[in-house]
Length: 335
Ligand code: WQD
Image (cartoon, rainbow, N blue to C red; front, side, top):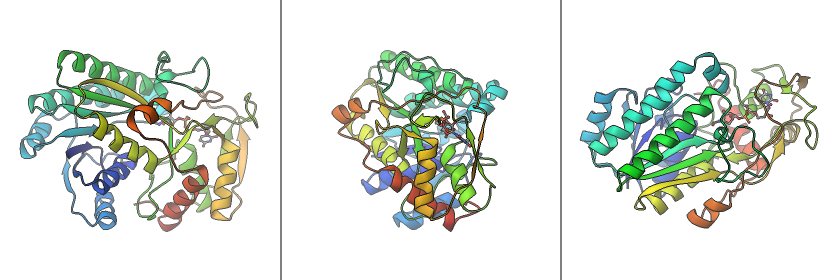
């Protein structure tokens, strides 16, 4: 299949491009490089040995999208382009509604105008908010607790309603838990702008000496060791989950939603210990107050994706730590 990957130069988008190419699909990247760099494309070509077409553009730009759809006969779109910092979304919600919601609406309109009838959407477990219990399955009610989560839930609704109105459209909604890790080559990985919000990239930057210590946001949660527990999923497993969804559902109209997680929860301190083992160093940390909006624990019930997509995560936390360390130690300043 020929696939347009919006945000394809980003962390999950770039790894998904490799998984698509590995299965013989053709990829065109559409990215505005607001949270990524053109160097990523060069690394993807180095790893895959394949030239990758890339168009610099913004999903809010109607005419730029029409141009790229007119230039290529796409079979599907995988839509990653968007903003994803929870804290930033609280400080600047309108920017998030513009990019994440309006951008997705415009993309969907242009797709349909060009008779492209399959979209895989990068959603998030953040749509669940604080779950009534764990593990979380796809039937749980959605209670997003921040503007970022609200935008993801809104786009899910837009795609669900559009698939109901346009009976040829297949809309696949993938709810990620906590992506971590990097491609085993060490050539690509997570490279957040500024101070990392997420745990794994922050730990990695402490390990290479870019940050002094990790702040552990609370050790008084009702969990195994008092620190937050999450379902970390290797980014290559996540990428392969997108390919499985695309291949299973591209010709199944309607909307389909899946959790992409491992079904296992790990605490902050367990992740820190895994990383110390991978890098052979002690990672200094200081316990601080809980972070606003954090919850004690959540992890996925990944059974629906396993049953219906024939996909499940295969890589463990040790591999996430080892692959992250290889990426970060080879690229201490990122791309
Ligand atoms: C994980 C755990 C923190 C940083 C986020 C967002 C969203 C989503 C998934 C895309 C928590 C603790 C973290 C640090 C810490 N991505 N922590 N010190 O909050 O579970 O979810 O990632 O949809 O970005 O929802 O991930 O990595 O920020 O935190 O102690 O410096 O690590 O308290 O327990 P989170 P996270």
